[in-house]
Length: 88
Image 1: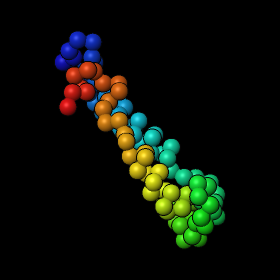
Image 2: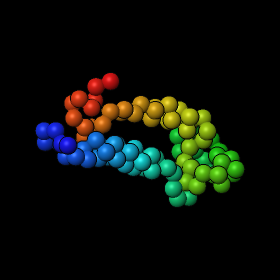
Image 3: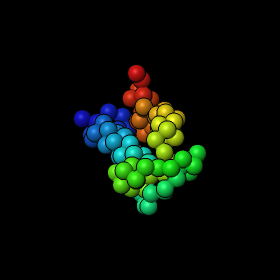
Image 4: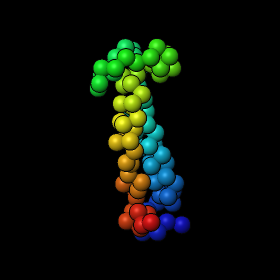
C-alpha cells in the first residue's frame, strides 16, 4: 500500500538508484587504456608487473595510495530519498 505520493515500489527504487549511483561512481574510477611507464604525479617509474596487472594505470603505488585516501570520502546517504530515509 502506498503512503502519500510514494509509489508501491518506492523503497526498492531508492535502493536500486543508490546501488546504480555507486556502481557508476566505481566504474568511472577504474583505469582504462594504455598504462604509463612513469607516474604522472611524481615521475617515478611504474613497474611492468603493475602495468600488466592494471591496464590504464597512471600512478605509482605511493601516489595511488595517496589518491585513494583522498577519494575515500563518499556520500553515504541516498540523495534521491525522502528526508526520513536520510536519518541515521
